[in-house]
Image 1 (cartoon, protein in one colour):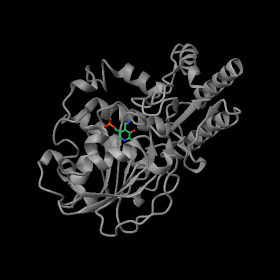
Image 2 (image 1 turned 180 degrees about the vertical axis):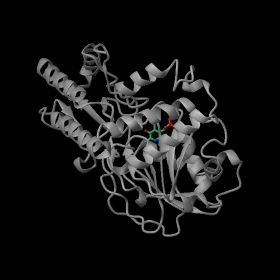
Image 3 (image 1 turned 45 degrees about the horizontal axis):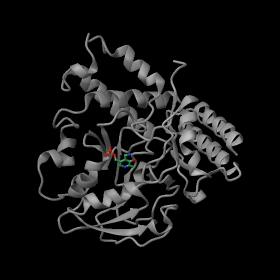
Image 4 (image 1 turned 120 degrees about the vertical axis):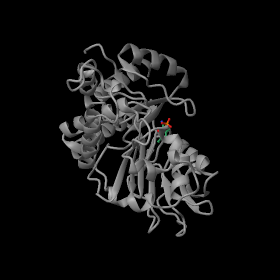
Length: 360
Ligand code: PMP
């Protein structure tokens, strides 16, 4: 499809064209059923088989140990900000949070009604331009929550916070599957699907089994992760379309060479884009601490804000879509998740160079 733009949307974000094409081919007749995947029972043989294959493919891609349960739930990452606190902490428990930007701030706010949440470290004082390296974790905390990649501020942890025996809980909505990961270092990983997995409306959770057995607080079954686990994420009707597209995406990642290859590609894309920004003689700037720059979300500013509207219009005309920065920060943001190839990043770099020459 030569007319498709390069899509730099932060989320919902670009999906691999191969995945979209396969979904299109299968839309009217999925696996010989004569209907689409959205029109069959989630408890039927075909869907159950697909669901199981999808989980196994994810386990193989990420090397998820057997002592972890994988859940395909709903509610967005935002609902799980609250729900994870209900499940992992009792009403009297404490939990620690690392705040490095908009989403980790939201995570702590939403957890407050359910746990004594404490901000163990925050980079707010430096405008969320870095990630904390050393801080004290409450050894009695039920968990330590952090956001490995801040989608809006454009910071990323390139090391794991040291939490001792306190389980690490990570909101990986915008960096899951972007490089190899040692899952055994985490108590729980969760991610909204709409960046590196598939459509919105699906949330992936990877939970260490001993955490699933925590009593949490009194709550309805529908909120309890252990109940969802007992029923293989089919306690109620799952997001069947999202689950299916996640499965296609996992197969696509494997076909790209798995997380090693994807990770190398993502690093090369980010390196090229940051080099173009840093090498622009101040025409473009990114002020994030270089050791904490995100490989997924690259915010940048033009030296003169008055050029922003022209930049956005010209970039859209050049087939570069959705470069407008988040309203909280202004400027530009290029989100370059797994589905964005180097070719798209190069098209952006070339455009930025041309634009700077024309307006410098
Ligand atoms: N966490 C992060 C890191 C995000 O990027 C987002 C969405 N952009 C969310 C949480 C919220 O996700 P949702 O809208 O699916 O609740």
